[in-house]
Image 1 (cartoon, helix red, strand yellow):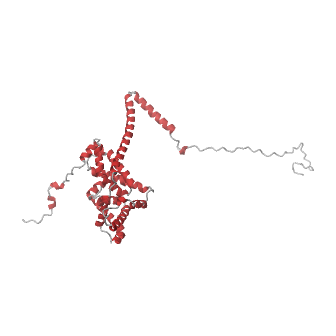
Image 2 (image 1 turned 180 degrees about the vertical axis):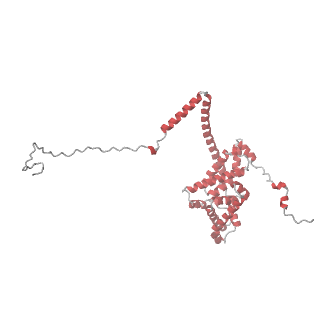
Amino acid sequence: MKPTVEQIGNLLALKRNERPEEGYWQDFLCEFHHQQREQAVKQSGLKAFFGRISEWFSNLESSKWAYGAGLAYASVAAYALLSPPDPGKQSIPVTPVNYQVVPAPAATPVEQLNQLDLSPSTQGSAGEQVF
Amino acid sequence: MVRGPCKLLPLLTPPILMFRQPRPPDPDQDLVTRAQQGDTRAFDALILKYGDKLYGLVYNMTSHKEDTHDLLQEIFARSYQSLGKFRGNSTFYTWIYQIATNLTLNFLKKRKRRAGLSLNDMESSVQQDPALIDTTHEANPEKQTNLNELQLKLNEAMMKLSEPHRMVVTMFDIQGMSHGDIAKVLQTSEGTIRSRLHYAHLQLQSALQDSWEERF
């Protein structure tokens, strides 16, 4: 057997009595005012800072455009210098190549012929053809 | 010549009924105006006036006391900051309810994405919460036990509803708001509210079926 919609409604209506505990709203209001004050102080600090800057800037007459241009140039330059390099453009680290020179093995001395002997009975010690 | 009943009779109703009736004045107009002029006590009075109702709305949606407290702080802070933009196109009650429902639904979406609080955690917190247990039947302990168990089942079933359905059930069945008021707050049609309510009641009926058979 299912409960009827009315019965469910009655059961849900019991939850109307749910209330926060005694004194909850007093504490809630204290916290609320505290947070609002903190936020107001933060906002007024920022407001005062920007207000002073704008006041100083408005006091400058024609030179303010030069100051403005200089400030813009300085901020662009500072950004270019201080911004982290693009990781895609980083140069590949160079690893030193081992250029160790290995001396060649000592060559066997070639026997030089002092004079050419073309006689058929002669056999040279350098392996020349024997006739 | 005798004429039959005029079928066009509804069109001949007095023209005044064809226009929208003027909206009744906002009962909070005075407090709102004073708060807009910087009177913090007037805004405190508005917090105290609607605090309990909004607490019930948010708590039944989140089932979490700390979340409810933080959300209420955010709701009232947001409405205090935006009070200057309130032009009185709706009553203050509808306006602050709109802020509350939007912030609560956004919060629930974010909480769903976080892995921190699972449905089981919520259920256990609901079961252990004395605020959810009705104390009007303390004279009859057996009846009270049955009722408590049913209420716990009901809380579990409520938490299984989708947020828009739970919101409508909370506003209609728990807070006793009319279909029209809920439609204004949620900025939708009364038909949509009725449809959501019907679907949610069916879900709750099915969820409570077993417990109901055991008890009665």
